[in-house]
Length: 88
Image (cartoon, rainbow, N blue to C red; front, side, top):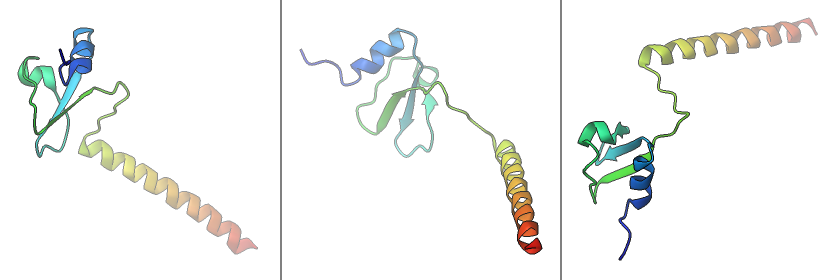
């Protein structure tokens, strides 16, 4: 008998792994068990994976804050270098 297409994921889920799904034309991954109660495996138009344990999810506000901090760091460093060059 041929193993199920998602046998490795099903076994990992049975051992406690969180499975994520990305459905046809979706832009992100969703928790498969929350979505379907752990019973539906679509054959076409869906991808499945074990949820990465080191995934950091940021909201728009956090991304803007980080971008502003990095922008300031780059500008500050550029200004320091510019002062060094102007003294030469």
